[in-house]
Image (cartoon, rainbow, N blue to C red; front, side):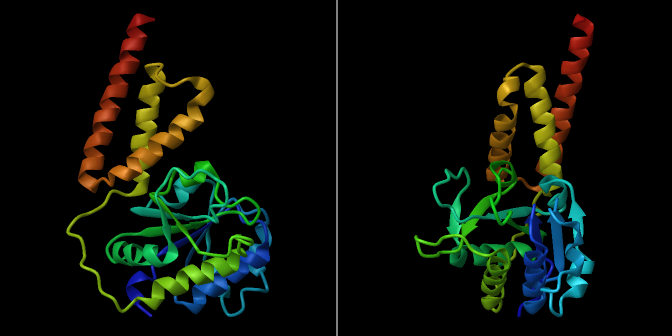
Length: 245
């Protein structure tokens, strides 16, 4: 196993069954991962799940968050998972085999989040809007969905399976998703103030903006500069509104 990727964050978004959370924690422990994050779990008693055989420390140390944005704020790359089916994806789609290498490469020098959705619905469009791209585990067409714990196990196995392959580290510091989310909020504030955004379609505009920002793959310094620009623009817009009142 390659210890350079053990800090990868496994993020379970709105999981419903404590046994599935326990199974995911067990898979993490099997392959040497320990950073479990849970967003709005349906059942709060998951820390005592009996399915987490030998993985109680992973469950006990799990961090809970109210939103996806909070759960991935310290990461530079967020990758969602999906069964695809008939949904229209707005992010690039990779198979697990092709996704593993870039995840390993990025995790060597920055935090990476791997997101799994609810057992019933998967990741929502809003949750996916926080992801740079999406990966898919190839399954037969007649039965595409997988158990949450199994999906986590397969993804983590693929990550450690090629752990001996060293990738060249990039000489750059990617922006954290927390900073990118602050940029998005400042941009959305400016778009609302300028009446570019229709109040009825505000959520869709936010999802489109997040997807666009993730495709740009900002360096940390550039993101901070853009954040400062947008903050100044919003200050001017709000000041102008007060003067015109």
